[in-house]
Image (cartoon, rainbow, N blue to C red):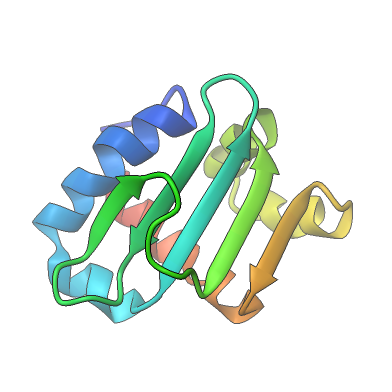
Length: 114
């Protein structure tokens, strides 16, 4: 599938396809995430990997266990370089609320979508 051009492409197309193809892998992550991506190409998405049928939907849905807030440009950079997440976090450009340990599992989700 390659690198998405935007968060919109990632969450509207790639993540739902990956979840549909690998529901068991998705359920291994077993958490509900809310992504709030600011700026052009961004938006809000709920990725529910805790229910019987994992899903990725637009907007704020189920109560998230982990919320990720980041600017779209930083988010795109992070997809290309997962190590950047920590740097952005320490620079205050990436906000994680809820359970921060769940944020470390996101790499699994994004590698499924690649």
